[in-house]
Image (tube, rainbow, N blue to C red):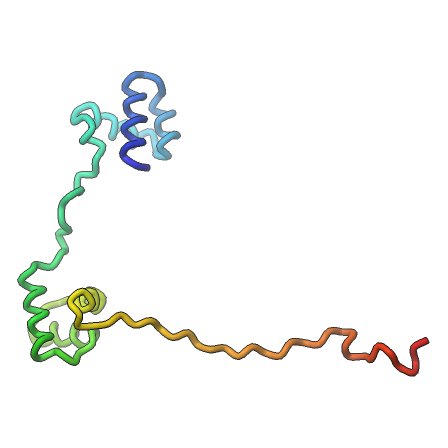
Length: 144
């Protein structure tokens, strides 16, 4: 549900045009959620409907210095390594724990790895079964 639709619904709820139960049905949420969100809407106004994490970076995001260090290794020691082997060596030699997928994304963004598509297995089609009537000739000496 978009925040704009929530704003319209909560303004209707504030004016008394709909009930909490009606707002919950309109928004597709429980009445308890509507009560909690409506309380925040009355206290903070329109900004109370926005998610509190909006605009913040993830706490799990790697620091710029660490990413730069990893990339500097690809210019020297790790230049021929793929993401899986490089992730193992980073943990083994430098105690940097990073998943192969995260490392692969960093490598692709900086041009050290090219995303490859998997080739589909070619499957040979089997010969079609013959129809029942194809087994017997249409014109035979026994036909009338």
